Image (tube, rainbow, N blue to C red; front, top):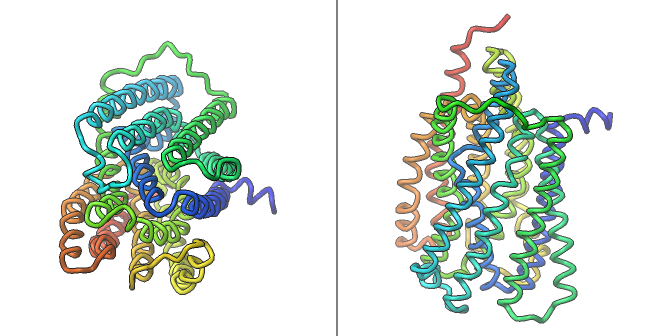
Length: 438
């Protein structure tokens, strides 16, 4: 029984993500107590930038998860080696470009004024952002192993690496805070940035070597990735990049909107609630992550019944997910009260709105994974672009109406209603066009 569970990549991915989520929540409590509301709000802004940087890969890493199953099906193993080498090389160039671009921009842009940071000097704020961008860029390249694990249908190891990373960071943060409880705020932020960036890099490095050892994959090959194949990959990758950037603007821009419209301190209550509801999202995303390449495999093989069966199972499972998230909404005030030591004022309806958005996002994400997996992206991109163009002005519209920090989640909810109608409809239309492979 235990072996069957441990061999199931969907179940183990969910378990590992649950471990990551619990470790993350404890880390948030520790860091919030250690840094205080203002400096924790600043750290959240920096960490959000980390999420944005990881998405600026021109979709190359996402393309791995879609193209490698196709190449395996076609038995083009030498081309796979060349493709992976090209991915590392191109990602390295992108990382260098991102770092240099941000470094130069930080010299001419007043980050302190943009984010209403009045409790640190502009020099320190710029240094803090540059330091983190450096670590984020090297991890941008080292992070490729996660896509490789998923592409080779070994998704649980991708989530295992995240769990190891999060637990390790929790332990390191605890030890650092224990031994250095009274250093000033600037030293705290710099130290936490170094711990986070360096340890994450070491974990990524370990799991990269583990992947190549596990698969016995050696990248030595005489075949070079031809220009036509690269153009095809970059074309697909560019579509993934548009999706990733739009997705980031939809869900990771909230903290920046709040900081800009109000102040960094206002980020904390929103961050606490959003992180709490991120827990079911994290578990689900981890559990369905291996489906990306499985969807690609079944679609290539025209396995219509397997695809429709996956959709049916999820739809039934979503009923249980709704019940669990609803229970989460009810007990959230109690969880927050024991999770966060200092009282945080949570705006009325923020928990309810966040819970509804979480459910809509879960439903839309499952079906969007199918579109991502098979590379049918035009409809999805159109929805995302429209959503992004509307999201930020709509958020500020609700701010002007006096909805406070609830404004960002209200605008997201309105747009997500569009997603949960159009995306599943597109998926069923594509699958129903398949001729069953007997």
